[in-house]
Image 1 (cartoon, chains in turn brown, cyan):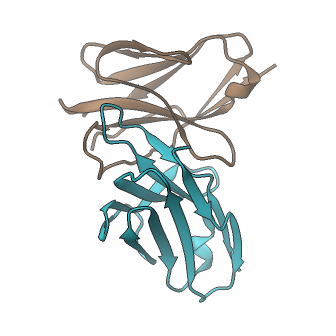
Image 2: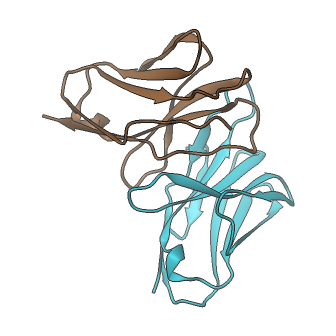
Image 3: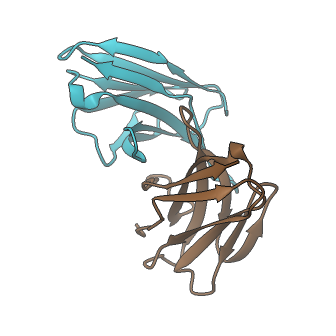
Length: 111
Length: 113
């Protein structure tokens, strides 16, 4: 399994763009990068998944450089409701047995 | 929520007693997982299942057992609860098509006194 490293916490203000970087130096050829969001007292929720370059959906963008050793989750114009823990997972998209979470990044959005 | 229901949602039990948590799903997903989450920490995988009667250990399986006698139910049992097993327990399923995202239940808060 590719080990991931994320900042423990980040602060931001409402309306700003937030970029959370995940380091995964040992990513394997078949590995995808997936991000989940977790609010207090709730289970994690899928945000976005990608393999290379850039992926965008209605809530976030995921930037993956050519070497794939890191990735950046970008949240545009955050609001107070984006305060949550964000997890970066790296693994074979179709290996359902290995599905591990790290410690995540606690994002605190201030007014 | 992919039709996932966890029960009970809250439980207080005494040290040494057996406890069973239930995860029920309504959409016939093959892969099911049990995690625990302690304050200030991420989720740690306890056990997972890849089909009826097919289960395997995760990162922190000591003190826990699981059973899956039918597709819709995945049971987590603490044979003899200890205070170190006080935690929030989450059940999850994963999709197996082009989209392989996971969906989580609402969690069970277990307190062992």
